[in-house]
Amino acid sequence: MLDELNRRIDDKRDELVALTQNLIRIPTINPPGDAYTPCAELVGARMAKMGFQVDYIRAHDTPGDSDRFPRTNVIARKQGRHPGPTVHFNSHIDVVEVGEGWTVDPFGAEVKDGKIYGRGSCDMKGGLSASMIAIQAYLDTNPQFNGAIELSGTVDEESGGFGGVAHLAGMGLFSRPRVDHVIIPEPLNKDRVCLGHRGVWWAEIETFGVQAHGSMPFLGDSAIRHMGSVLHAFESELYPQLAHKRTQMPVVPEGARQSTLNLNSIHGGESETGAGGKPDDYDGLPSPNVAESCRMILDRRFLIEEDLSTVKNEVVSILEGLKSDRPSFDYAIKDIMEVLPTMTERDAPVVQAVSDGIRSVLGKEPEYVISPGTYDQKHIARIGHLHDCIAYGPGILDLAHMADEYVGIDDMVESAKVMGHALHVLLTGDARAS
Ligand SMILES: [Zn+2]
Image (cartoon, rainbow, N blue to C red; front, side, top):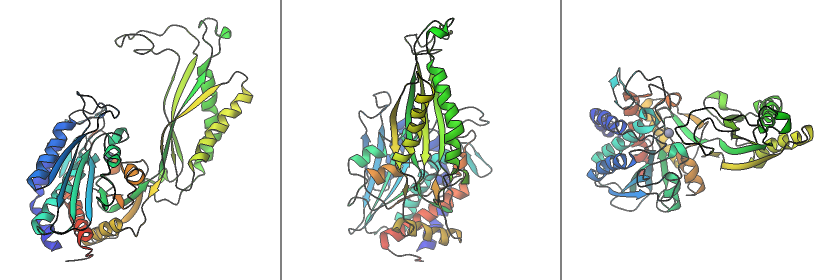
């Protein structure tokens, strides 16, 4: 049975390449969330051809949704002959901005040396295509399957997933009894099972000052200099502290096996362009003022061994400490996003099934990893309360979001075989069947 499945997938190699190319050629850049509808429709049409019931769900009133940039998700379901478990493959259809440094057309989907190049090839249109081809090959060999198969193409993963998986999970589409097992084909490499991710805390710190003329700064109080003292305290106290917090989670790359902090943005004083009441096309200098406000956005990634209140307290205690060092220091801190770390158990059915597939297809033991950043698994765990979920898919994680992003064709073919194998195991309970 599984040999036949593998053969079918090999036969569909050209189809897999063409499907991936067609998906890459739709530039679903997020933000702003361009071309979601045609991309969702391409996926939907293909699933409908395989006999799936296809629904398009627009996430009205979620961040970024508008008639110009509708948040269009697609979800497809095919019911088998008899009731049984449901296996769901979820991929995000959005890609990040192109950026600089490309030597190929980012939306040309050029094939070169066994690789398909393009923005989103690796993250994660290659994985989406591989899962669609796996399903197709599975149906060819098992037209009389029991249970149900689902596939979704969802939006906005790169901007938090609120109009995508979070929205669908809020509708009950990622909960039992509708769904039992979820595989997210994010690019974690074909021989790795990604069990979950570290936690995230995003916060905005604002320091306050008093405005005055820039020629007489002693009449005011600079919010930027106050923020400078925050940065200094982070360097001397917080960063060394974080470097010592190591995790038992198998995070890849290894550098992320500790707590990390990035400062995503910082801005003080008047804006150089736009904002501050200036027209968007103004590109002149700001006027000479002492800054009354400075804002910084923190991106703290934390470990399963840490708890969120401690993570927050580390920052707050530094800010409070500055109050005694600097008499006029004042600040506000506001949470922007909180995601708890998540890690699926190694003996969970979906982990076992994909591991079995890796052993059978690749002839090696799978590696179990944790992603340094979060992905849509967070919404499935938190909103859907479904914990039998992992990420597994082709592509090299390090290439995601970079120039000249690509996905290897052999990797896609092999991971499609692993997904087909896992689908079989999950629907039949028949591990190592052949
Ligand atoms: Zn991704």
